[in-house]
Length: 373
Image (cartoon, rainbow, N blue to C red; front, side):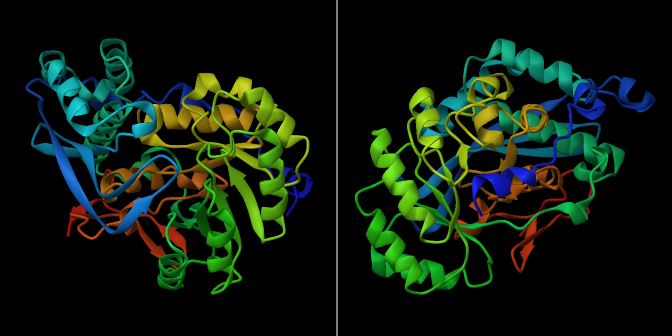
């Protein structure tokens, strides 16, 4: 599919009243919630395979885990620090601990105001903010006894298929990973190194499925990026994510004018405010809760992107089912999903969103609907 055909299918919803009034709740919301207990910690997650991108390589990931208990109900949250933005789990945990006196007296019903105040008090640390925001909205959903997607007015049946991501590896291991992902109708392939051709050859040696590709800012020269993208088009690739560094917006705009494949912003799309300057260089945006600071900012990004006529995608980091399920509850709003970070784990402590023949199946329990394995 070329860009012209792809853009024709764009849904252009405006910024709706749900985003503008996300904090609106019935009279129950006015109830004072004293004595909140917040428990931040670091959770280590082991991977099934070593995970390699242009940015890092690891056999495990540490995420920020938050428990919010108030009124006899506990909300769970998680944020996966992104090394690209100089974050790590321990610093995120400490950032939350530094504002515990404020959080202990906060009212989680006022979640929009509460998170605005968190953003004012904490510089950076967006994964930690995401963990707090997810825990709060999980708590709200549980108190109201409704799934998060229903609280947001969404239809679980509209959840899209998700890709399964194949990290950079040797051709032998790449083929093994692709075969293990047999049940997924579309794959996402990590590229951006000198081994791109060998990686794609290994993938294509065992599957003819449609592919989506993520370069993670790997190509620093615009002519190289054009060559790579035009070659990838011949390999059955649907679109390319972040081919060049995030700050090379003008170069990416030039690349966009010389290729046919749509280009999705990832590292460049950090929050809703960043999107307007990206519209001439990118066809769509990859929204990640860990990157922007949680569910509320992710919703703002989705609606702003749609208002600009851009495609929308929900992505994730390597994390447990808490963070991935939180993103999945927003997935009925978007065109594409890459929500497989929990599927890459050997020791996911939780179970939430599931995948059936590639399609995301949202849990119907209250809040996130996540439970322990």
